[in-house]
Image (cartoon, rainbow, N blue to C red):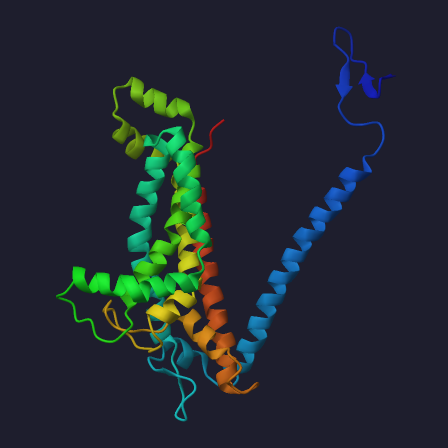
Length: 319
């Protein structure tokens, strides 16, 4: 039977009536929201598909002229010269150098900040520091680039005077600047992951006599490892995709070097510098943008697939 808009179905002998929580008439507003959400999800898929197709179509035009083995394994990058060379290894090396130094800075600072905010900071202090930390993510990257040139470069020269600082640009300076840029990303997501760990795990460790440091390092950190890995993956993606900071601080010289004091060019910096309208449409130099972009897309895709498998392997599920 139906009572006050709620459907009640009778059970068997000895069973209490069962009530259905569904409304007797359709809710058109809810259906409209579902349609809007489905449209947004479909639009995101279409946009992603369009990006991939545009990259692949331009890259296909490039590889009709340049063998793929020359592109992937060549050690000289000079696509705009009369004697053009299309070996992408120098700018891939520059990109990985920037990512390495960025992670050297961001992972320790970000994780230590997250541990402090999650385990040590009083609630009032946390409510003050975390919003300020997240605001750092909104600073324009061109401002970070100027900061790297005007402050970080002289500071690192004073701290490491024994290094050979020649020229206005350096991989290490750009890497440190990008690392500072992504510290809030690592800290914020890691803090959220650590705070989602059930309180009972902490209390059990304290009951066994563990100190706060041991609980943080041996209980909370391993329990939140999947969220921490996700934070690091997002930080790596952010570092790989950074353009303005590396363009201003690392320079534009494509070379294979691991010296943090030398200049280098990254993949994103090449795309940003080349795609300015100064090159002719339809030339091989124009299509290098799509080839480098497609390689960058493949690199980040492989990294994210690996991270997903890693997160699933170490994920902890609490009920």
